[in-house]
Length: 74
Image (tube, rainbow, N blue to C red; front, side):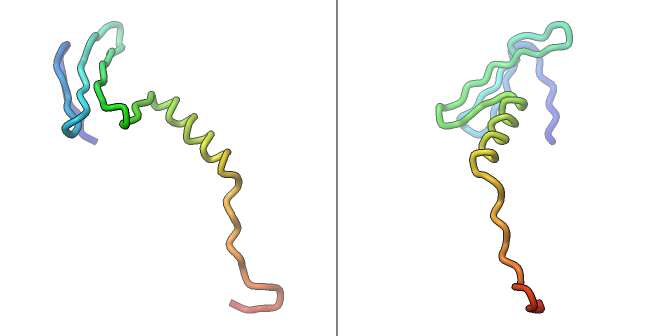
């Protein structure tokens, strides 16, 4: 993990297309502005986890691998 210190109004760049700006620091919270192209999805962690869980539910249970038939050895 890369850890950076930024002051109010300063930026962080991720690649050529994502820019993160520190907009406000108050009461133990940091407000960030994120500029990214539409094809880059940006979510809060809890929303991302919910989307992942929903995607797993829609895929259904994982398919079972076929094992040896009764009486066969491996």
